[in-house]
Image (tube, rainbow, N blue to C red):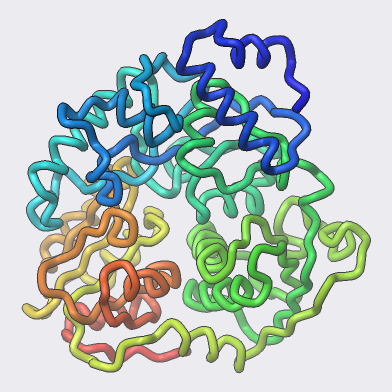
Length: 426
């Protein structure tokens, strides 16, 4: 790889062993990807240092966060002294919501790790936004800005809706980027790699959030890691609809960028979106394809529902308002629990607007910082779940073993009130 003098100095150890190790990791990573150089970034979103459930078995005896960060995030068996980060750095999902540890059944051991993790992040300058949707709480990149973000649903939004540039990073590359302000220049950082590859011709109405999710889920399954260009849409998506479309496409496939003709910034026309080339394949999406995606997501058969999960990716304030209106004056069935997840900053706004009180009076919870898919938190004894999220409907059967229903937010709230699933594709 071609390094600048400053990058070479970091690799040679001029700024200490932690930054040297980070540069070593990035150059090895870049070479494996075929990148010829690094690119500067000042916008990094990374994962947990060591408190998520799948990392509990690697913590040191004294829970030394520097040792954990060195091992898990910098690939170093030797504990390193971690300096303050060089970039604006943001932390994603945490292991639980401190306001609801009891409801989420978060162990005391994990709670202590979360606190240590938080102190460590504060010391080295990582912003604890604790959400999979950093663009909802202040981290809004600009068009053309180079990012180093984990979280597939976030990077597909940033690439497609905003026109920022980045690939889905891992914990190691994101951590190294925080310390060096560099990331390999490859993939969707490169302009010519951002053109669409597959044409999706939409031949039915796509308007509701459920429709957008099903379109994304079907498209992701068909194109896998390619970049779809969606043509024929009649309605511009709102933030919540675009959020669900991208998350669904990144879940059933590995879509990191899409184009909506005449709607997203790099698709003013079909020709521009495709880079003036013919598509590799043209795929038609109509009512039959929407039905297929819907049926693939519904693996449950028992209509008796124990758990309703909303807010994946984390809910916008508009979604919280919608749920509050649906629950106002109602009570949940004694046999069900409803948990909704939103960023902490939006939860505080929901508190001020009275939405949280309405939701809690109904017997539901508005939570932050975590989610069932990544944090593995859930009520006790759940057998059947329901969700309005394609991503959660895809993951919950595998991660938590729940038979899962998928439907609209109205279907989900109705199931929480009645205790029974009566959803349908409309």
